[in-house]
Length: 162
Image (cartoon, one colour):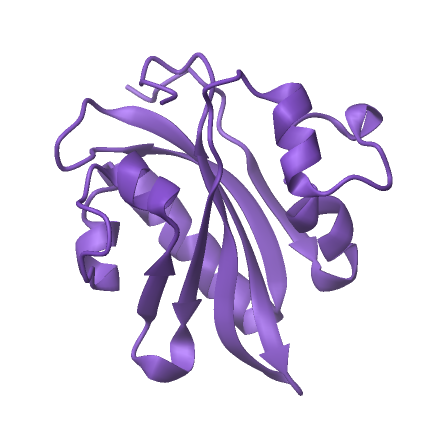
């Protein structure tokens, strides 16, 4: 049976719309977006007080090396500053969510497009929860060299919004 809450967000978007979807976080519908604020302003206005946004990066040129902010470590229930291989992080996604994420990731790299997706994760030392994953490729010339983005717990999804 497919989960019904929260409703997954499956959306791919072109890089020329990066400012609208990535920097603002696309946390709610476009009508709530102020054209000027940064992601911290949007998050402060739209998310519960305790919710925190984590930043991440995957260096494709360096064997998919991950760089995470403290908030991403907390979301996954992994000790801060631990070295985490991409395969280990992907294993913490529920099977259906991992498949959707991998498909959108490959599409993002191949077509140089960002994406937004709600995924179910199985943190190392916390209950299952839903996380919003926002990703955008970083290009040098025509080549995608990194993916970077934001992660945060979907409010009201049953998991702690720490």
